Length: 368
Length: 228
Image (cartoon, rainbow over all chains, first blue to last red; front, side, top):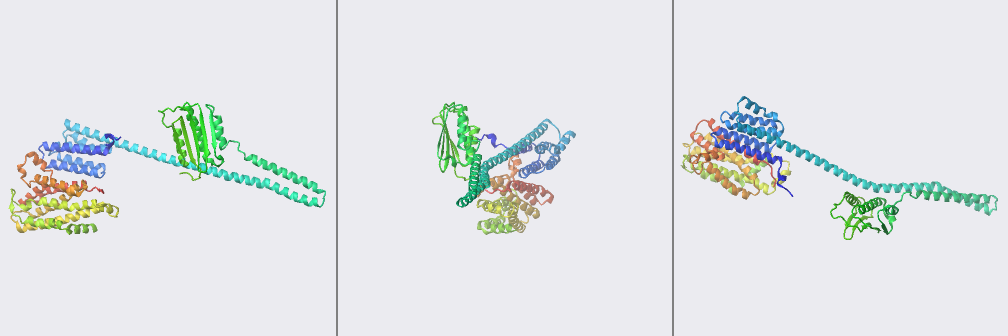
């Protein structure tokens, strides 16, 4: 809601102050007995004020104001009040040294330093100084806000790139594994099998000719075959991951969650889920279980993972009581961001207990 | 100077403009001497006529703003300063020309009234410039030409009163006489009276200078570019 203080700005304050100063001077001229010179002075000061409003004149132009006032002072003593305007302008620009002529004129008595004039000049310099500090502060805050916004944009771009990198890493890992497997199979298993085949062909020839070396050849071929079977078993064994991946990781998380019983149900073919989606699903499950313990005092958690050809849906439901005053925390916000980056969605349902539903698309459409 | 030529042609193209620029002054100069200053009546009211002419001419800029022509000019390689200066120069030329015709008529028809015709012509010319600047400043505060014209009629009336056109300034109370100094028509009247008395040209410099200050002030206010 906009309050009236929102429409204030230093430039409006400056315009109002200038108008009041000129009005004061005009009132003094009106009530006094000055003639055309006073009128010309006020007019000239008004023109300089309008020029300052329209363009941004440099500070030394206030010397023109001061010269004008001081030249009219012998004809009209109250022209000294006009010195308040250049004083205000120099304080507004943060260059008080340009007002030294005013000080000099007061000291040597060229301008009569009576109390109302001094008060006016003090008020003018104070007002100018305040508005100067005000506009400097606003400028500072704007720069800071701009910098923060810039940093935030960079951070969000970085997050998007990170999630993208996840996908690319998964693809790269797949390619490397494929290469490793093909190399191992070609170098070791393939060679042994080819040698075994040649040995069997040699044995067949020797056996038809009833050669005594046939038995040797057979034993050799058998050895080659068993060693290639061994190589194959070892290659296959090497491919088995030590760390649980995929559905095993989710099962491990549920198993290690000791605070309350977790029931995990899986529907569909989980092997089709891409590696980068598993990372997001694991994070979601951990966050949901943590929330169940921390916030809702639940007794029982049901986790269900459904996979079809278009989406994968993870639902975590607990039967606890949700604290209605709790605000959405950073954990859920993070999950929402990751879901959106992967092109998915997260939703909550508090009709019976608390249910968190996470939906991710299966197609590799990349980051939205 | 394309815009200058176009502004000149546009000003004299429409019939109301022609009547205002040529017809009315022709009617005005033939009026006899009258009133409380000893001036020919036409010259007594000529300041008001100049204000009306200036407002009619400057409203062309306002029409440009309303018809979005100003927006189109904004994206053309023409600076706003060039556009404004050429338009205003065209209007000033028209009004100064009109003033020259009126001054010549004074020389022909009312030679015994005016002491110095040069002072008269300079006062007319400078007041034309002031009138154009005033109309420009006025138009920059309004969006619709119709509302601007309507309020301007009232303002011109007030300026006429303060300038001593409708009744003598000396009849006004002293405080009002001081306030009258704020109106350009007051200084215009001062200049006309000095021209009638035919004194030194140096005396004319005060009202001329103040009218020029008025012109500068109004120009500063009115020269801001507003596209909407």
